[in-house]
Image 1 (tube, helix red, strand yellow):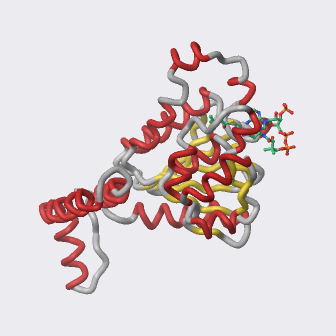
Image 2 (cartoon, rainbow, N blue to C red; image 1 turned 135 degrees about the horizontal axis):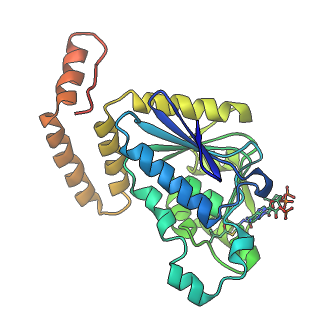
Image 3 (cartoon, helix red, strand yellow; image 1 turned 90 degrees about the vertical axis):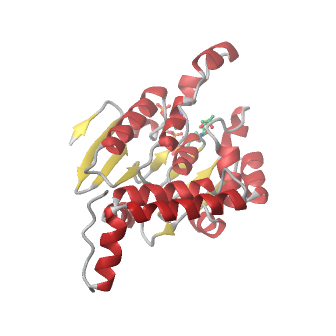
Length: 259
Ligand SMILES: CC(C)(O)CC(=O)SCCNC(=O)CCNC(=O)[C@H](O)C(C)(C)COP(=O)(O)OP(=O)(O)OC[C@H]1O[C@@H](n2cnc3c(N)ncnc32)[C@H](O)[C@@H]1OP(=O)(O)O
């Protein structure tokens, strides 16, 4: 296990695991923490031996938001000059699928960080929210945009304008959460199992599948369908398409070589 200052990282088989580790501040996301998260995830992304990443926090908090103490003295000039939060978004440009394993508070930047991941697994104690309005600001890390795409205008308006917390069941019903597990202690094992399943596939086909789903958020339906069809055609130039289909016909397990 290698450690940074604010996170822990380890590799379990073909899964890279990043654990937020600022327990005294409920994993509040200061700039240093997010630089470490992006650096660790980028290293996993570049590692041919890693097919999926899990990002998690503690049982009490995935993350209680961006670090308010770090932000409170900022000015418009300093925020603008540093383009605050711009580099945090680099997480969304990685190609390896990322599973967020979420327990406890996922508020403000914590909710936004979970939404930068590709799938969310949550436990019954999880509380999502965009309470920035209570601090005199609005979400600044994509919350008003990604939450709206995930749960629709009605609920996003409700959460961003009242600042109320949304429980795990409501989050699952609303489409924010991929899987709601029965007990908080099942969150990480379920996320790891999901990540291991993804990592057992062809790495680049999983990456292409992620890209195709994400294209749906950026284009018209016709453009998205065209992207999907052409990408589907292109996969017939790969070893893993030949192997995957041959394995089905020969009634055996596929041995993907990620090429
Ligand atoms: C990214 C943007 C632009 O979208 C903006 C944001 O993310 S703004 C932040 C949004 N998040 C919040 O507003 C939540 C703030 N935290 C809370 O409301 C509460 O801490 C709580 C409801 C999550 C938990 O309450 P409780 O159990 O009573 O614990 P506390 O004593 O409040 O907290 C323990 C400890 O953690 C520190 N803490 C908690 N959240 C943050 C935070 N976001 N930033 C910095 N520090 C945080 C809290 O101050 C306590 O530490 P001490 O002061 O005791 O040292």
